[in-house]
Length: 261
Image (cartoon, rainbow, N blue to C red):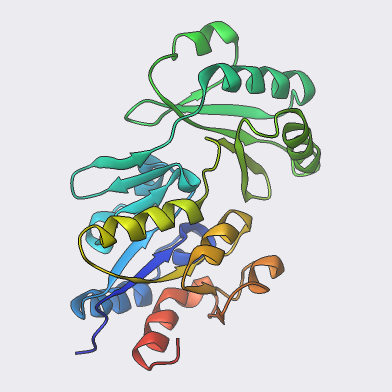
């Protein structure tokens, strides 16, 4: 049995852990069981909230054995207790102003707010409907818009409200407004601190493929990406793995076992 004690793998979901079609790769599952049996820790670091993540990976509780980074770094969630370990929230007044700005400048964009302990998704249609959600805890805003306007939308928000939010892209058509300072990388550091407080020093291997993974990859001890990652992601990674369709996480575990990662 290989010794994976002190190693934690934090992997993105879409385009990294799951295949390009959103399917779970059996080879990854088998390698993860071997990794955990040798003392390794594995978790997900995703832009998704818990209910949408569990829709993609229903068996997540059997797969991970460490707190998960959700909401693109606004939340650290313990699957064992079903509770958030850390949660950063949006300022509701700033968020309401941002939603109105997006509605006026980009009427084709769909705007969603994730609210409360259940991270319920509300589509923003009017200020009165939004007012009813105040005081419940707003986690993030997801903006879905045509690919040809997302650059302009991002530039508008960064220029108009530069310090009110952290901004992130999780796909070519999805743009997110998060609590200031929120990134997967910052929450990954908190996860290391979480284990350090328990007297456990860990080496973190992060795996991701898209813009919203870059800060996490830079914050990790070892940065990795699947072969299908964006070129901007590949440029900053220590290790390039195989395509997500073929089991990129299994590739990483095999490299660690062989002492090549």
